[in-house]
Image 1 (cartoon, rainbow, N blue to C red):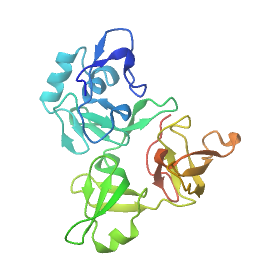
Image 2 (tube, rainbow, N blue to C red):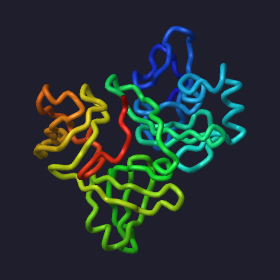
Image 3 (tube, helix red, strand yellow):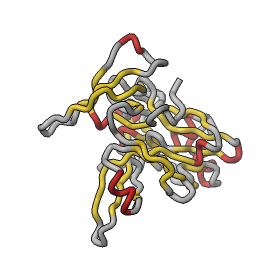
Image 4 (cartoon, rainbow, N blue to C red):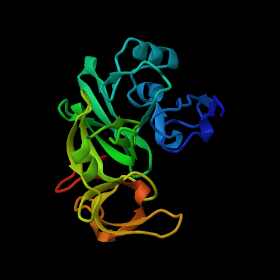
Length: 244
């Protein structure tokens, strides 16, 4: 794997200028895939405008001013992905990372109380040797929910967890009628309600039919996307801020 990234060839999800320089920062392998993440340095320098150049941005990070998902991050190549929570205590500001309608990662402000929790999707379930169920979340976390919750929680469900102790606060099931946000494809950033989950008996992904939310483009009618792009964000209401 190459250690360098040409700016012109960087994933379109990164909100950077393409022709101002030849090279850009490449995210380190971590909890999010490279095409759906942005290095922390780019957020500090290019998005938040807390520094004028890379040297200043690295100093901001080395001083421990940036907290990602409840932990101080000093690695300028650390990958920040969708639904990650970024906090700056010195400025008393908190952000959640979301995809906008153009598929670019954006920072949306949130309150301090909202920043103490994080929404995660269950990508996989595993049975450990001791018989305990392990949940593998979309951001690289692994949680042992206990026997009772382990039976209830399924793949593609979402969990609202406390960042301070990784405890499960709420469980949102992946089913018809739940509120979802699309995190990929041409319908990126759209929210709505699942009308139908169609299982495809082939190597291809399952298809999900979604009815747009009332504050979205409801006149366009329902649309379809694959289940990998669907992220459950609530049952009765959407539990996260939205990109505006």
